[in-house]
Image 1 (tube, rainbow, N blue to C red):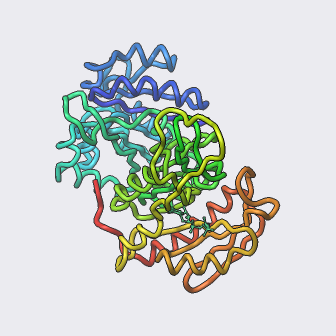
Image 2 (image 1 turned 135 degrees about the horizontal axis):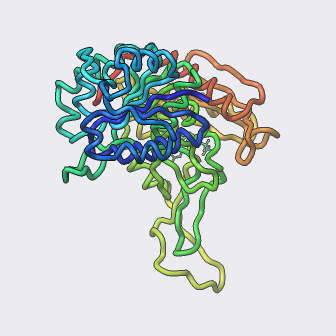
Length: 406
Ligand code: CTP
């Protein structure tokens, strides 16, 4: 259990701080809410008090509160300071080191880790002044849970909406767990699960794949502070919390989503078992009546990884990682794929070996890179993901970062 100060500043997203308070408490933490003056115009302190059963700090100079002592006392007893929503104003005041109310004083006085979840209009979020302030705070070790894209209260559509409370709570959890944030801010795209190619309204062809390996990579990358998007085919296993999920069905759809987003990624891990063939005529409308033998003409689906390799040619990023599933020793095929698809690393596995493959929680893999090969023993898929990310981190360290995207 941790003691968390939750700062609420004055934005329309303040109502979501109520849900965040509840979530943090549900996860066993004690929450002390600190509201700015503007925040109180959006939500009443009573709402937070009813949930936390603690008085909410609303002013540095409330009667009975000794301003000097209160914020110092709180500053030294909290395990984390979270601000959600963090307005452009509060970000600016933190960056400038102002201490003109309780929350800004608390920020200066505490040595606990700080997480900010900004929320504001798109133009404000992308304004150079706000970018500079975010950069200053990030340089001081402040973590950000970036706003989501979507319809904003001001009527705009774009980035600026407060991240979902679940995502913020996950970020707090990671910070408290102390996992070294070795992929802090790195943008990771992971594909997971199978793709299904529809024959008609009820039938499809696809590959066996549970999604577990891709989800493990996503979970471990997020735990190291990466900003993770998972493009997932239909799976029975749920994707991990704390990552963006884009659901797709067919190889063609996955191809479109991945290629669309590739330019925003520092690392792409193609863990999905993409179907190699789909009905050439597309899905038949309705249900094909059964009769005698049925012939289907199949055509090759686009090879997403190979297209990524071609698209990236001549550049170092995004780092590209593929998987190779073979029946039998996978290393030779993996080496061929590494060259043919122009990628940095192939994770090869023999899907027929006990303890490897689809529906189990373990895997036995060999990493195949241009200059070396490393065979791992049977490990949990999460441990395989950790070892994979250790390797990728070394690759990322060797390749220049693309320009920062807000
Ligand atoms: N892949 C892809 N698009 C496809 C097929 C596969 O991006 N249409 C990716 C997979 O996600 C995986 C790698 O390519 O990362 C696997 O390569 P693939 O050539 O399909 O090999 P396997 O499926 O392992 O085996 P095979 O060569 O026998 O098909």
